Image (tube, rainbow, N blue to C red; front, side, top):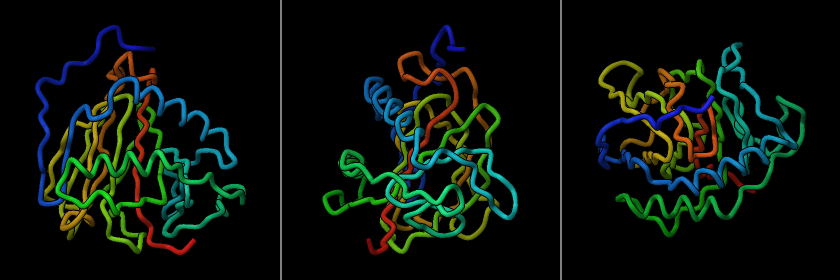
Length: 220
């Protein structure tokens, strides 16, 4: 059910949470969000359907479809051997361009950024993601993250452990989050979803889509 009124999160300004970590609220326009939601629906048709990866024997509440490379704990493969054995969809050129445009608004070098894997995660109203590091890539290039749909509470921590210090921020529809450099291996996770906060114009009536772009550093 769509919200009758868009959620009011107050003034949210671009900011640097830590050296190498940047939050740019509302970076994607509503028309761009709608277009990406349509692409997500196409990706979800396969050849590899969205699935909850199994970590330490437990299925994640987040459902993931991968582009370019298939992520499974704790490695990347071209074929989804933990799902149906099919090869994942190729990484689209437009996501490379989107990643470079995102980095151009941070302190990172944008022109050489060439992500080759995307984890596209869908969160329903009860989904969570525990604190973790993105460390299965050989490359140390930044991770670029786009959010569409319902807002979530995103916890961004330190590089040593899952405990404090960390900071909780709101990621809403259209937000961009980038972390690299000294923040590249920071622990992070989603502690709470906020159902009913997806704006009417984003193309997703409920739930949250999160796309994270990575350079794997792996050979083709």
